[in-house]
Length: 217
Image (cartoon, rainbow, N blue to C red):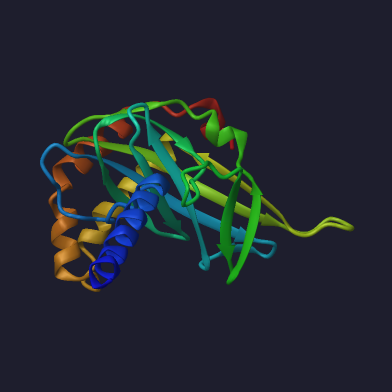
């Protein structure tokens, strides 16, 4: 009887690990570079019906052709660098604990959760190749909560702004964070380890022309 009781926690732990893998991994933000790993950068901007808010968060999925599944948290006014396995990736809805894709995007704005069908615009974003030791700047996830219409609640929408100016702003934010004395020494040291790659990206973005839409917002 005792032998059976000992096996139950092990089975439960194995089941939890399996469910966690189906749901996807949340990478450590601003972690020190690991050999052979790639990295992505993503930022977040949130608006409530009164305008920009500093109280907003959402999680977006990132999946590769060979089965890598990640969950990338975003927060208002924050820029995150996440390390991922190399591969060809696309944006996707996050998955349930059983591995099924959710059909909606949820966001916490001003302490309240809102949902919307997962935007087709995000699904249609082009795939990208994450190369070892290289950084891909995804863009800024912009989540907006519009005032309610008659007979309806507030409307949630989301886009990924990945114009040159948006990517440049994200890289500059990361570089500036290295100089912030309020940041912990360990976090600042980890970010500095990516300095060369970030500077190369900034130089490359500076050489890219703006699109007509960027020039005439």
